[in-house]
Length: 146
Image (cartoon, rainbow, N blue to C red; front, side, top):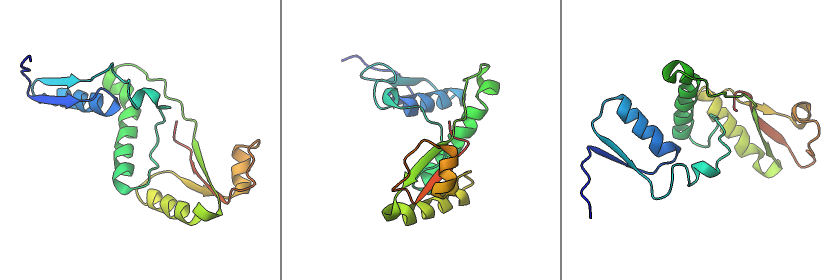
């Protein structure tokens, strides 16, 4: 087996591993080595829809996502080229059995600074007029996602 001479070893070449490696290099943390058993982004990252959003189920993920959103918003200044990010918004639909939990989650996200709205089916229909909202009690709408 070959010996690896590195200061920090990052395992995984998806969005998390590569961003950690990039941040460590930017901080001059020493010799950074990233390893991946397949190719870069061949795991969950490569199957992702690449949604940039802040709405999550717990405070820690909301805060991480908010930091990531800020990172993407500053990308062109930091990296020197445009990512071509497009704001599309994101809507999650909930039936009566999940409405209470969804409302509470929306409130927690708002308390963390996420721009998220709780909408009635009528207001949701204004955004997605062709949707069948027959069983929908409320929706959570994050207009700055993309």
